[in-house]
Image (cartoon, rainbow, N blue to C red):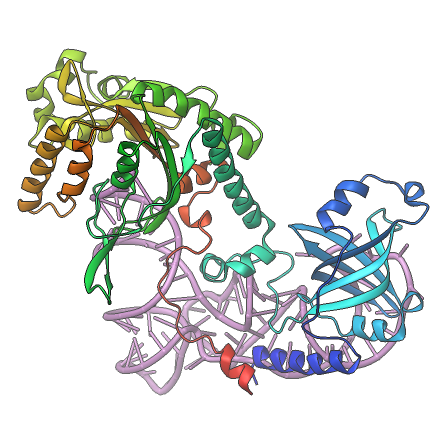
Length: 497
RNA sequence: GGGCCGGUAGCUCAGUCGGUAGAGCAUAUGCCUUUUAAGCAUAGGGUCGCGGGUUCGAGUCCCGCCCGGCUCACCA
């Protein structure tokens, strides 16, 4: 018999023993007096004399380590990412409780009643008077010292990762703090949270390949949304002047350390402002989110210090000049000159050429949080033109750690111009560009009812979380990143035996 | 999709030139009433990712495939 089978059998036998002792192996409600983090916060600095008179506690946790010494032993219970030692001795508990203690395995969930004390080495511990059994583990826990290191196992069995690696838990707690911070900041400014379709008959709001699905009763093909944008702007038309949505987008494209097929975006739209207004808002929101997530505005990411208290701003053309790599730095007249742009790029259109040159020269240099503004119209089908320079649009992106973490613009609200942009996209589609926008006539109809001047923005929650948790891969900040299916697992057969 | 790296006990990892598959943790048994990566003794535990090939002999060399990581391309 393999070790794993042997262990499984042993533990199934132990379930029976636990029952024979009068305990339920998959127990009942447990009304604790404290969580482990609460005990550590409240009594962590109390000396032995301060624990008199006795402080009675009732706590639950998962068994992380056991050190048995004959008629006594120490157990570390873990809960909420922290651990508390409990001390069981034969003469302090009932006979059945001691027998139960002797049958405990690493990973079992138990509760204890007892009083707090300091051990000889000074560790705050619970002197156990009663043990409660809450749930049995049948499988072996990861190694106590190294934790679970195999990244594939960490992603596939995130529950084990969370049990074994406190740092992993911390990442997802911080992620929740980030989302919470953004929600609070938006709510304080009068935004309301909405939910728009994730299954859409037409996809739009971004340039990306979609996932397809099918509804049987209606017998229609649908797309998983690549962005909520066009629905959120319909709501602006409808007079919901400040809306936001935090949820998943789906893009049927590559997977990398910065891309997961489903990812979380915050999109928000504010009527009567423009991209300049959004820049100021964004700078403040990033500062506050950094503060809420990490406790400071300076964030350490992969050895670099990123200062979210000081977000730089460059126009795209300025950035090309500022971060020019190799050779002589160009002048502003050159960066504005269509012929110069085409000469320095593989693209056939000046606007696309500018973007390519920007990406080649500047993008990777944008380690510090930076706003890049004023984009060419060709790459921005939904943004409003600059009044004095119609080939450019009022748009900016936010970069940090060399990644794009946000995208914002003054929304195009002229239905005639929007129709023209859709027609341009259709022409690109006919030339074979799968990612070009589809025509969304209902959206154009909505604009025909009048949409107020509006600023809209999207922030990538996963990438922000990477930065604020110092995580090198997007998979480290997504609880269950997409992986290929793993094949036979074998637990069902073992349980049936 | 291309390139590079990896997959050996439940976990963390060694494995030399191709010659009987190892350690620590974990598990089992015994001893141990303030230990803390507890300790001591004994024992069990392997589809070396999968399938071919070369060879007297393959964890090791060759080919194909699967899974994962990094990276380039694409993308946010």
